[in-house]
Image (cartoon, rainbow, N blue to C red; front, side, top):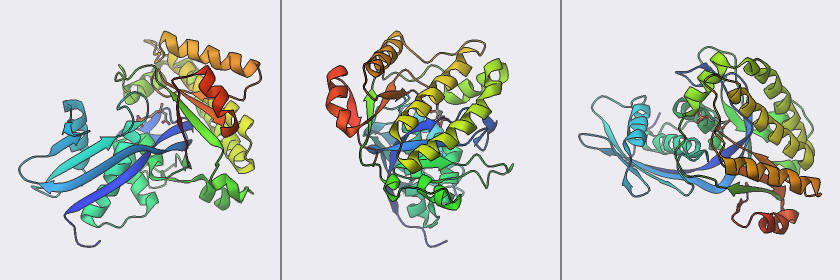
Length: 325
Ligand code: PMV
């Protein structure tokens, strides 16, 4: 809209889906089968600076020239916006491990699109930016916001109704009565339990397509996701933590079940993932309000309330505790 500047710089938080996005109805536009809901990781995420460059794109990740897979994916995304003969310098820094199922592509594309918005002076609103971030990575749609975000699956073939917004705005639109404090759930904590930093062997697009095409259990996924999505919005509106935790954990296990029923089978877990899951279940049996979720990787994200922080730390000394708000 306005005149392009010389530089754009932006931060976007990582996000953890409580109701997962699993399955694409359109691969090119990253249009999902189901709506999803996430919570951000607060200060953990990506900071990106973008400038114009001469002759070729120059992509840096955490201060070094980016690995080929990262640079080519970034350049391919920049092609969507590239005026003829224009190149970019992109400097990206993550304060979360890259590619370990900790959603760095989500914060990465959200930060990049915000930085591009400044560079080109587009002045798009967050909904519009969320749709552009979606073209880089589906989960990036939700990383335009802090706190809880919903990504509407939408129905249109062109994806113009497939955007994200703060859950609070969505609740208001749907006239679902919500506690004002649900906008900022101060006492909610996310704990990261890292099992591996390695890049996942099967990318999420391939994983989703394989599951959709071959898993009998995938037939039940859209219905489960729709129910969990509603349940989570209700839990957030009422600030009902046990309902939130139970729904998120069940949703993650249902998603992983669809993958295990695919052929060839797909399992992102490592033995340590399963042993940590068992530890959470045991702690819950012993009365601790503790739940987990797992994305397309081996790492666990714990969900608990601040009052239980010390107990969680005692059980899992290596846990990295993050405040989503
Ligand atoms: O954004 P992608 O294409 O990496 O897919 C993310 C898929 C999950 O992390 C498993 C679920 C989600 O909603 O973030």
